[in-house]
Image (cartoon, rainbow, N blue to C red):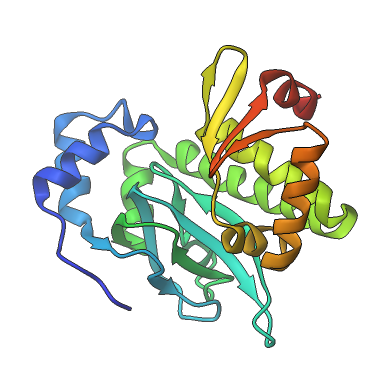
Length: 232
């Protein structure tokens, strides 16, 4: 596991205070949480842990993104979730004292806070934050169910369209009735939908021809109404 420099204490505290999940913490609680954290900057493509690794640590994303994925023996990969700043991973293994259920890999340069699982769980209970963290875990599980359903029930083109709308919803900015966002690479999209780069390239061209989206290089535009229809 390649790790770059250790993040400074000030960086950790600033990041924690900026997370909505911990917005109600007192100064004392923030300082205690920061003392518990072992925080580092990670390069893009860093494997934080593999499926089957011993559980225990809980990670919080302070900056960047981490993909939670499953891989087959023939190197096919399905991305179950993307954890963004303020999100956690490693909670399942910490809660049931089992192995890690999936791989965790940084999608871009990221800053992660690593906590000893038992100490972190003790801290959230002591500070009345169990509902917050369990809500975060429930969100991760709900997203996993959605991903599994998409892979089992939807065709590749529909999975790609659904993934693009998800990215637009979570990362896009509204500009004159359109959602604008930066598209992941074709290879990254292929990993997320369980397909190949060549198939993604072809399907993106089909979506452009159908006028469901507009593209200027990797900048994608979709109508705001598309997100409303997705929610319905």
